Length: 243
Ligand SMILES: [Fe+2]
Ligand SMILES: [Fe+2]
Image 1 (spheres, rainbow, N blue to C red):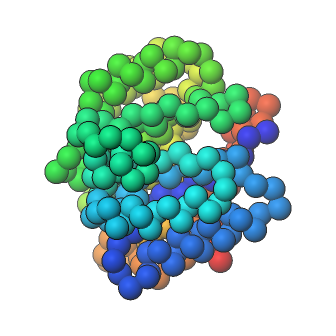
Image 2: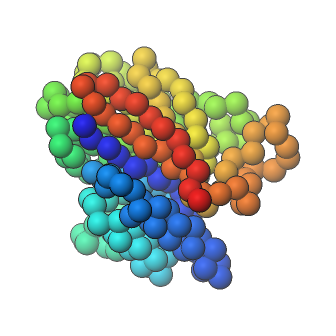
């Protein structure tokens, strides 16, 4: 059995300790578990403004003591992300990474587009993903922006576009377990290209749905996360509020 904690959108900022405090709550919760998770996946918007000081605060996640799989969102900055979180050289190209946890492969795709808030997978990212999936291992395809609408018109304008190209790649490979994303700050389940699509709720805030009230984000809602449990070739996801 492989157990993954999926957190997203901490939006770390110089905000009087609010965002860092929420990350601490998540870290403390994960450290208290009776069985440690095998990895923590963070699906973007790690730094609110892509600043080095914000990425320095993100190092608190390492206190969980398990491998961290981190990918950028629209609020991140590729060079600062690379330097601070991956220890690699500055670079403006997509931050695409592959990670292995037990028998599982995680394809971490960069759906961010510098200077924009909506998302798109570059041709080089899709070609790279095609190659990763050809390896045949059960694979989670991860990115920040969901490639579908979710019933929130403002958020839907900021989704991942060009999604028919992603569907074509996924259609060639039966070994995709699920698509994992962030960005929408909501514990949300959908499908794309016949595959489960699971969004992590937000650490920083929670999406307000049009039938719940006005405004985009509820900053009073507690941080939340997803547990993805992979056992006997099957995925089970539990969503949890963090105390
Ligand atoms: Fe976000
Ligand atoms: Fe985002």
